View (spheres, rainbow, N blue to C red):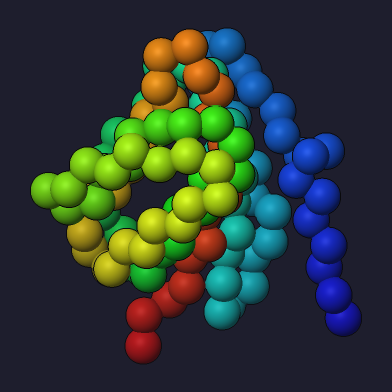
Length: 105
């Protein structure tokens, strides 16, 4: 069975907080969509999971460990477990990130 996610219809912004929506959740994988207004930020944090952050729309600054990466649409960033990661929407630009998280064996 296929699950189709029409991201164009799922993108929603909130002026006072990051919009977060869990799109799929199974034991093997979680998929979340985060929509940030210009200047909003998801502070770097650690998780015991493997993560791919995919920039769906906009431009932002992604932090992975000690590295800062400027990324825009259609860029994917892979992060190993327990490495600090986060992202911020650039000034004047909204940012949409799809995060795909898988457990570590």
